[in-house]
Image 1 (cartoon, one colour):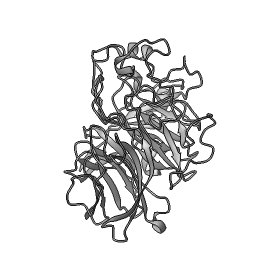
Image 2 (cartoon, rainbow, N blue to C red; image 1 turned 90 degrees about the vertical axis):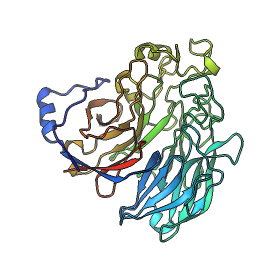
Image 3 (cartoon, rainbow, N blue to C red; image 1 turned 180 degrees about the vertical axis):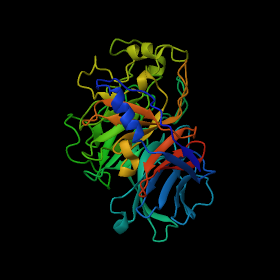
Length: 426
């Protein structure tokens, strides 16, 4: 166990919010919790997401292996394996792993105690050239197997071939986080643009979107008022959303999103909103771009100042879309790989009670510093700006893929290196 004290402020963000006075900062600092970390699981293969039951039962996914469950006594049962994976009670022979694609998000049905329903986001070859899907299944009473698989969403785009871009291999930009809102009870599904310039602003393609559906995959009511749009689309114009959580008071959805060598973003969503990402070639003042995707331009393979990239290819293009959803935070204009997000809840978190924590995986490129960390953000009441940002003082250096608060009030994080950690406020 590692004891961590001496909270250090990482930065005070100035995105339209008032700065705190020095005395207020000092007072807040004294009320931050001291943290202890412990290792819950090791030896995993790219753990991607987690979902808890109230008794501490933990479902988790490994991107290239499959779905498993850790019981409160520490026993682990392998439930649904990907293609060619041994040792799982059931097999998804159509489920495969390629690049960033594979088995990703997992969510527990709000009525799990009565219906035993569980949902995962995974990549399938059932339909050519492959697609990302949301699968629903039932978990048996002793947590040793799953059954009754139903693919409630079958048509989320998948990138089947390599393209001329950084990280341009098959399977890029899938999104993949799924969460039930504690407010409206619907399932929110985040997707990615698959390195396809036409996808984010499309009203019919489900990539580069946040979807909102019921447990059968049907569109929730009042998703948007955009004529001709697929009714399952809640918001559009996104790049690669890998985190979604909900304000603990208002239940407004808030996402974390990867930027294109600049400007990772935290954004509050409203139904029908446009995230403002439009990487199409020959639009918005741009000409041709490699493989018709301007997402990393200009000079995509070379080091270019982040501000220059942001000017040429904005993450949120207010010039083209004046009503685009405004990001509350843009990681000081840098892209370091924001992943999952969670609001901390409970008095044990002191001054961080109600604050947003997001995992940063630390992608360095073209002079961008490597920034593996957990950030804690103090968002304004409307979630449209940020007042303060702190680096969580833990001595874990890893690619923080998933952050979830457990029923015990502690924070759990899964890292690409193969561990799940517990972070406990003392």
